[in-house]
Length: 399
Image (cartoon, rainbow, N blue to C red; front, side, top):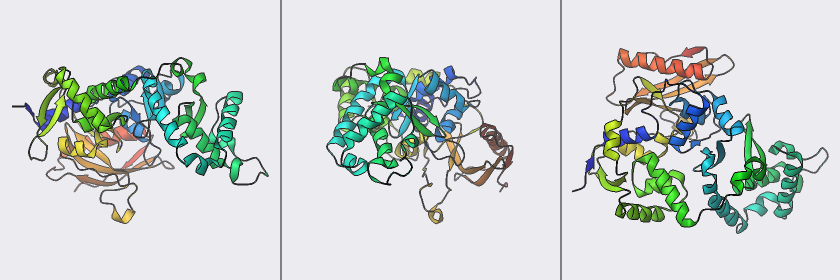
């Protein structure tokens, strides 16, 4: 008989690994932030700024006094993080840089075999790419706007802005250039061998090394997972490869098999866990008191299927849904209370008047808006307002 893990225990282990059981009131500084991101594995960067950038919301949910300058310090000064692709653009610990080399190679090969370069960069993409590299080598860090067509040049064709932007993105995706900074969230590019000379020269991992790294680091941050969740963590290996690795890890004793009871009921689902999962669970502290507002791109939210099975929470991101078809709102933040999601809140920051507006608030079925819960929500909104420099809050009226 396999051990059966209640959904609450499974989510507590996941929250512990993802930094949501740590004290969010502890000191926020670059060193503590680096530890948070290392525990997460990466933090997804996103451009939507109706309230704040998603990466800032993700980090502030774990360190209440977090400020964007802390992340900028790690990315642009300490260089302990670099920006590249997982599921999307992300900030990743630089110590893992060489494990992105297989990804660089795959992207270069796939694009050279396709028509994307020709369609986006004209009939001579190699010439354009060489021109962009020469300018970077000669002038140093540049942005896409530095390649705009000179006055009087014909629009379209080789001198158009879009082909140069495409060339820069191709060079970034293939590891030739690095995003060395952001200005108003616009990328600043430089040659990788100038930004990370020691990492650029590192050996590319073999397929076997890469698979072991991707799966083992994923399990360290999931603790309990299915092979599909292991493959999906970095989005770097195929599900069949992750399944074979999990089988081998189970045979060697590096993983154990168990089953998880879904939060909404139903038959237990098979999964794998780190061998010390019981000790981890025994050491897990109680979740911090109060309510926390999570980013729609928080790693706990990202996998909707896991979210439903572990937490019984059905979340849909509606920013790209036509307004008339939205149920909850444009940029809805899940509300976490302890180890449960108890509601969802749609905020908007009016920067011109430094006002944080709560456009809608929905409690989950069976969750009552008690005075204590209302006070906890007010505290969470105050923390958010300080983070985004809002001086006033338009709170929803009690029901």
